[in-house]
Image 1 (cartoon, rainbow, N blue to C red):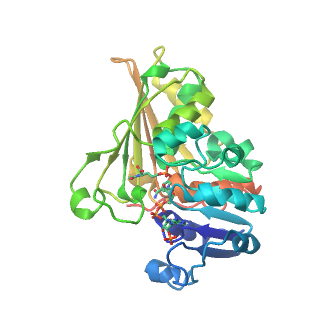
Image 2: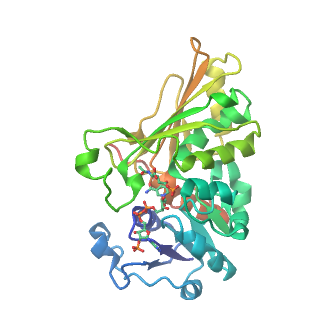
Length: 345
Ligand SMILES: NC(=O)C1=CN([C@@H]2O[C@H](COP(=O)(O)OP(=O)(O)OC[C@H]3O[C@@H](n4cnc5c(N)ncnc54)[C@H](OP(=O)(O)O)[C@@H]3O)[C@@H](O)[C@H]2O)C=CC1
Ligand SMILES: CC(=O)N[C@@H](CCC(=O)OP(=O)(O)O)C(=O)O
């Protein structure tokens, strides 16, 4: 299969290259850039030297459609809104890593992203690419909206509780922390070293664009969900997200029943690992991998359930999940090219 990557000079695109290198079904990768046409990828990313040294091509939809079977759009919001529909119309499969196609209601998209949305027709065609809960739809999809990094950790952590109707739906609080690679390669005032090192910062308080994405999926699972509190923080590390999720239980539950619930829900999910009773995951334990590790407990004193869910934001939060979707869309084994051990320490 021939793969195209638009935005290969970004972190998500570079990580796609890293993972696709060991993918047995991929025989050619063509890279596209809006700003560095003619530049060789290893000039921008020397760690790719001798492995990938091809030059970056201009972004031209007709040419892309002739050259590749499937395109990953690892680009900022707004780009997929323009490119995905013509690509799909020309018969190319699209996996979009941005938020452009995730939110079905265009008014909600516009109010949180502060920009025009993609067309309703391409949004309607886009399938939300959370494989653990949407595999059948992904199998038939021509265009996949790869979930956001925070929503991936949050939704995998919350799903078993929502689906089993165990929690008060107005009590959900998601306290999330991310490494700085989540903000992409371009430096910014909050991510440069002096601002971020030895610092811990809450940002986008009550305004983060992943709030409506999480709410939309929770509402699909239980229409009683209205709003949640979602709060992201930036921590001084490069990769990793931890979502610590709190919700009031409808009734007391034992630790072993809680754990059994998670184990049963994720029995068929090769990338979700549920920790033993009393154990909770740390971000380093999934570093560089496509795993989402989850620990869960019930506090008899407060009647609250706490879920700790960790992912590598660049892999399960972007590139790895995108390849998981590629595999499912093409009828390949879900773990193809992704069955490797996290980097530790
Ligand atoms: N980093 C992460 O952990 C995650 C990222 N995402 C999402 O994935 C997408 C990519 O993120 P990330 O790789 O981190 O971002 P980066 O900022 O690192 O890279 C984005 C790339 O997009 C390209 N680009 C910028 N403007 C345009 C344009 N107008 N047209 C076409 N291409 C453009 C640039 O490449 P060039 O100049 O060569 O065209 C750039 O290298 C974003 O939507 C992000 O929100 C999602 C989950 C996690
Ligand atoms: C640390 C950091 O800045 N993280 C990014 C997450 C980016 C992301 O996943 O955004 P998309 O929804 O566009 O894919 C943020 O909070 O915006």
